[in-house]
Length: 82
Image 1 (spheres, rainbow, N blue to C red):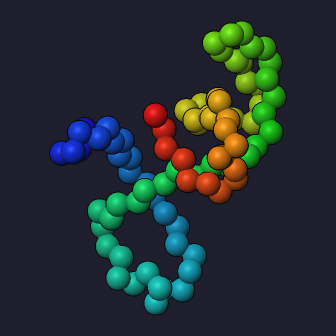
Image 2 (image 1 turned 45 degrees about the horizontal axis):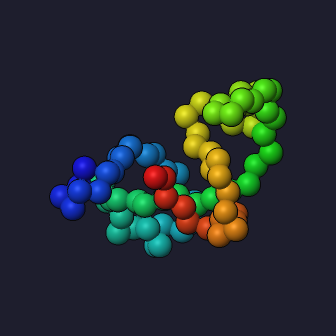
């Protein structure tokens, strides 16, 4: 929890920067990155019930899925887990 009472999750990330070094020379250790953009991907659903679905292709364990899509969500739109 942050000092404002917001639930946060932090993970270590290793990034391979491909832009010219002049653009990132000032970066250092312990920078914060906020990420969360929607993307569209085909998945293969093996079977499903009212609460669960077994996906056999298209996802890796631990990936998050938008279950109830609204008209405000499109590829590239920033999303936040609730």
